[in-house]
Image 1 (cartoon, rainbow, N blue to C red):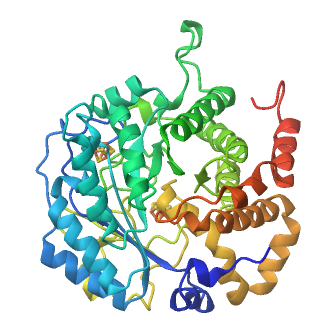
Image 2 (image 1 turned 120 degrees about the vertical axis):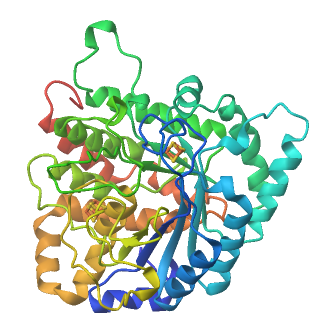
Image 3 (image 1 turned 60 degrees about the horizontal axis):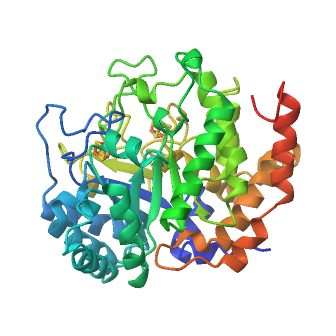
Length: 441
Ligand code: SF4
Ligand code: SF4
């Protein structure tokens, strides 16, 4: 099946491939204020630091420059952006009117607390209607664990899981199909027998956790899901990273060894095919396979990240632009002063696993390579048949999943083709021969 790239990106954005670029992305951190208590995050409510909020005027100026520069995807993140609901709504309208095609925002779920109160349904209906009146493409709701108690304890948001379950049909009625965003932490792992405490997490444990997560979010009523890989950037990191985006911590819940990460990426890549026909799963298996190879001692295997060349991050504290949320030493100044036609940095960084930037960098790079270095690309596609087959499978799946359009109901007839894909078998076979004993180890 041919992949219609202009359906994914309007022609203007698809043309970026001809310049060796990929459709660009901007993440605006509207605020670093938050009302949740996630241990994996430096912005949790009990961390003492002065909180910031970008001004409405600055945000609009940023959006106007983003639209004029051809930014294809714009995310409003936090902190918790819905703490500033009126401002957020105004910005969503502004971005839609400016013509940005893929507009995203999300919540930690605090909106869904107190589901037992009589006004819950009306309150959520008003919220869903207000969002439906914008051109929002993706609305994500964070979920850390398939177990309600674990998720609610980590987030510090009691009763929220039940509230999400009650809210989803209301959103669907308004034509909004939220995405369940899994923040991968140790909270995903099944409860361990005391003899295993302190031992590295195994592939079986990760796979059991991912299976339980997908089953749980399907049961809750979600139709789209994504996985956020664990982030832990130390302030004096040897890798020269310096986080301006506080969605990172040195808490044990996100501290994984490189070997655990390798096993985690492999387990996630092996689990996803089992659920692709039941829920639209954004995480590309080709990107997971590349990250697995990176942590297998092949650091150059992944495509370099587009942070600083096609993707950018704006920090709530000073409103300045960075290549991403983790390269705080590379301040690019005010976004509206940047000429995005001239990439400030070439794509070369592979220093973290931030899925917002790493997944699309991996998935979209071959399109730009097709025009900038076709011989090298063709050679690579033929030489690495596993990755090529996973990548083509991802493209076919993205098309069947309507490119995760959060305003469209899933087409299960199209998704059903992915109930059992030949490449799924090959990834399992590939893993099986590397394992001893069992399918994953
Ligand atoms: S992960 Fe999100 S919801 Fe949790 S503390 Fe950080 S900003 Fe708040
Ligand atoms: S890999 Fe990408 S997101 Fe991570 S530090 Fe480098 S540029 Fe930033």
